[in-house]
Amino acid sequence: MAGEPITMVRHEDDRGMFSKWVPGDFSWGAPQTDQSGTYRYCSMKLPSRVGSICMLPVREGARMDKFWWWNGDLDKPTFRESIHHDPHNPLSDHNWHGFVTKGVMRLDNRDD
Image (cartoon, rainbow, N blue to C red):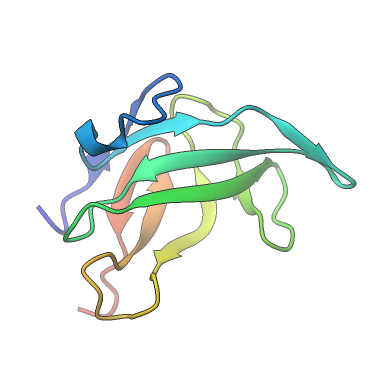
């Protein structure tokens, strides 16, 4: 399963329910605004060894500073660049590096 694509499943605001999520489950935070415009956070359960939750800051049509480019689709999102979730240690069980394209998570296995 580690290298198999995972179709993402959108949930409405499920704060506090993350423990019941499976890899690929995700939800959106409310739109927020800063000096550069509107952005959101996408919370998603990653297919890491322990299934970490990642909160990714995204902007539609823009890759700026700390924000990932997002295609604007709330149900089948695409993010650019890759997502490298590495909480403090590259050998951690929480580590995952991959791509989200049209609502599908794919492991970046170029290092395999």
